[in-house]
Length: 150
Length: 150
DNA sequence: GTTAATGCAAACGGTTTGCAGGGGT
DNA sequence: ACCCCTGCAAACCGTTTGCATTAAC
Image 1 (tube, helix red, strand yellow):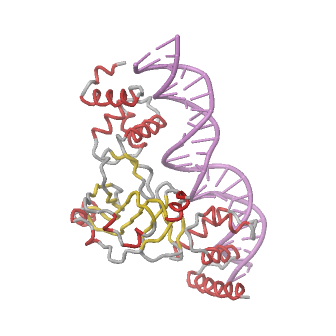
Image 2: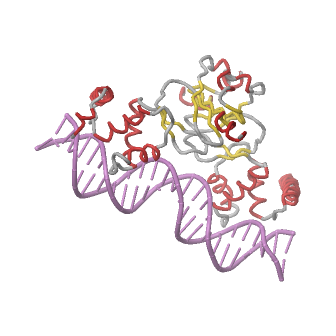
Image 3: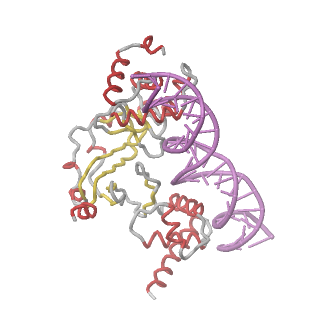
């Protein structure tokens, strides 16, 4: 396999990760990894498949799903469940929230470092043991606002 | 006795709503409406179907879906899209948020009256025009906490 | 050589839709 | 009598799974 030709920082990074996890470094896993690392958006499995299809026409959509799930388990990506949308994949695995444009569907990351349980109304503490907070802000992004002004 | 009075009240309520909306008051719509009004949880279409099936064995699941969508359009219920869960239906159509138990999956309403755009970090305002805020708190509810202590 | 991962196809589960017949107005 | 609504069945769509083949180790 021509993996050697594709050799980059990414290859070594992924090789180490696969070693540690005891899984094989396959051509497909490398290509999906490279694709993920080269974009800064929040692609769906289908979009990743489309983008890779040009260079790698034989890669199957179920391999994308399986690989993304593997990467999710390795902590390499995080699945984003956004209402009314298919599952998206986020390479930003730090704690953050999302702004979703109701028009173009693009997703932007929101950082809210001092948002914790004490920010919430008291009644929530009385409901049980909080494990995670999931915040979605829906609205029209600046790009779409400007376009509609034209 | 009281049950009859309750259903009459609901009947008139729904009759008026259907009149205003210009849609027919069918047996199925009434029964789904009564079921929704008699519970205080957040049922899925399938659960409503199961509950109604005892009394009304011929009612079809697709009628449940169609009716709930109609009720959603009328503003009678709100669809809840909660991550990893099927669509739930909420008879509480006022602005509120949700606590979801990761163990029993039960959903509790969170009221946070002074949560508005000014509560959010400044960066969000810079992203576009905010239309809605969607907050999910995931954790273990008190019931499940107590059960696991036993 | 051994085992895990892939590609293919088919299944899955929740939801939606086309249609013909039934029920509300 | 009109035509909206329902029940039935089948389609839908994103995702998952079983299986035989292929490739990484």
